[in-house]
Amino acid sequence: MTISREAILEILEKIQDPDLKKGLVAANLVDDIQFTDHTISITISITNPALHARKRMQEAVIFNVGRSFGKDISVTCQVNNKQTDSENKVRSILPDVKKIIAVASGKGGVGKSTITSNLAGGLAKKGYRVGIIDADIYGPSIPTMFDLVGQRPAMIDVNEKQLIEPIINYGIKILSIGFFTDQDNAVVWRGPMASKALTQMITDAHWGELDFLLVDLPPGTGDIHLSLIQTAPLDGVVIVSTPQEVALADARRGINMFKMDGIKVPIIGIVENMAWFTPEELPQNKYYIFGRDGAKNLASGMNVPFLGAIPLVQSLREAGDAGRPAVFQDDTIMSIAFDELVNTFISELASLDRQKSQVSTNG
Image (cartoon, rainbow, N blue to C red):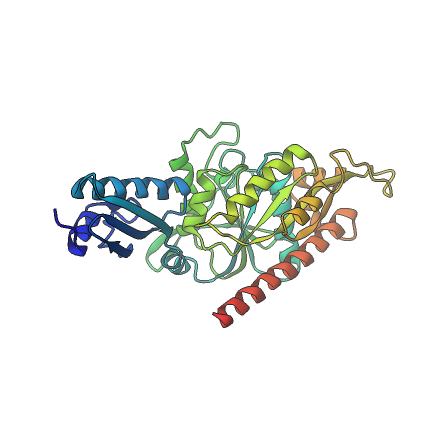
C-alpha cells in the first residue's frame, strides 16, 4: 500500500475511541500526520486521561498502521488527552455549580470524611451554598456524620426528566452511596460498577445552584478517581494526611497522580489531620502521637500550600458519631481550627483563580 494521508486516515477511522464509540477520524481526534517514504508519525487525542488508556491506544495505532504499510515502515504515535472538549461537555451537565472540589487521601483512616464534612459545614456557615457527594463507595461515612443513616433520596421531575433529589441537612445538599445500600452489608462492586454509581450521583441528580460541590473520594488512586476526572471539571483537590510517614508516602502518590499529564488537577493544599492529641482535661497540652509537622513538611517539599493542622480531640469523634459536624459547635477548639482551615482554603482557591486569570490573559 502506498503511503498517503488518505490511506492513513482510512486506517485510523477503523480504530474506535472506546468512550465515544466512534472512529478516530469521525470523533475528530486526529491532530497531526507526518510521513516520508519510510516513516509515519501520528498525533492523536483521546478523552480518557488514564495512562493505561493512552498506552493501549498508542499500541493499537502503531500495530494497525504498521501492519497495513509493512514492517519496513517506522511508525510512531503520540497520544494526548482531549481536555477541552471533555470539560466543555461536563460544564453543560453542572452549569450552576461554581466550584467542584475533590477531597482525597492516599491512605484510608486519615479522617478524609471528617475534613470533608467540616469543610462543607464551615463554608455553609459563611453563607456559601454547598453540596457533598460521598464517593467513598466501599466505606461511606457522610450519612453518619450528618445524622442521615437510613435516609433515602426522593426522585423529582425536572424538565420532564426524573432526577435524584439530594437530602439536605444543616443547609448542605448531600448524596451518598450509603443512601442506596444496606448499612450492615458489604458493597462488593467491581470498578466499572463503582464508577457508574459516582457518575449517576453527578449527572442524574438535581444539584441546582451551588457555590461548592465537595466530592469525598475513597482512599487510593483507582478507577473512582479517574472516573471523577473524566466526568466532572474539577477546580481543585484537597489532600488529607496524618503526620505519620506511612500516610505521607500515600499522600505523596496521590499528589503525583493529580499532577500527571492528562489529569493536571490543581492542588489547593494539604490538611494535616490528627496533628496532635489534646486531652480534654489538659487543653493546653499537645502530644504528637503520629509525629510532628509531617504533612506540613510534605507540602513544603512538594511546593503545594499547607491548609492547616487539625488536632485529635475526643469531641471531634463524638460530633461525628452524633451526626453534627464539630465546626457547628461554636467557640470550641475544633470549631476554631476548622474555621481557620476554611479561611485558608478560600484564600488558596482565590489565589489559584488569580493564577488562571493571569495565564489566560497572557495567553
